Image 1 (tube, rainbow, N blue to C red):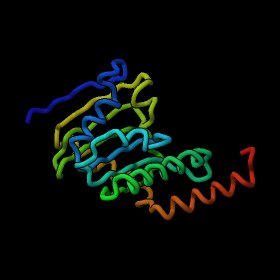
Image 2: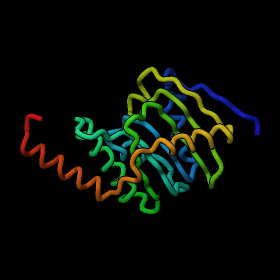
Image 3: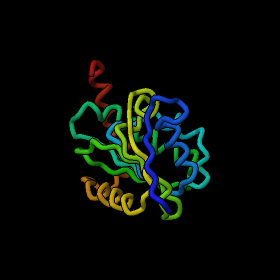
Length: 183
């Protein structure tokens, strides 16, 4: 297969990051998304997609200790878990942390064969995928995609976050909000 590189931008609503990522998801059994900023509600993004092939999704993001970002990030991660537990029970989910993460990488596989990879400035947020002026490239070169995937996994600071840990964090945040309504 010849290596193909495609430029993706959000200037055209018919071929923006949102469209390209959704196209790749529909062809994939396994996803790896690395983005420091995330959708608030994953249900809005995933509910319209055909996820019949999907077997696993791995999410790498940030979750800095004692940072206000935790308030929204925990809600976002719980939304991520809830969507797959309620509507896609057979999909294995993994969440990892790298607090130095700045790059955004989206990798798509179908039964261990790469469908595509997207390296971009676009965070996994609604503005990042659709509205912000973002540019990236989509590649299908297997050797490059293997290197990118290996590099992403070598940056993980915290091994997999369990759903119990997320729920504990959510509980602690809710307790904090009750005690500090102005926070």
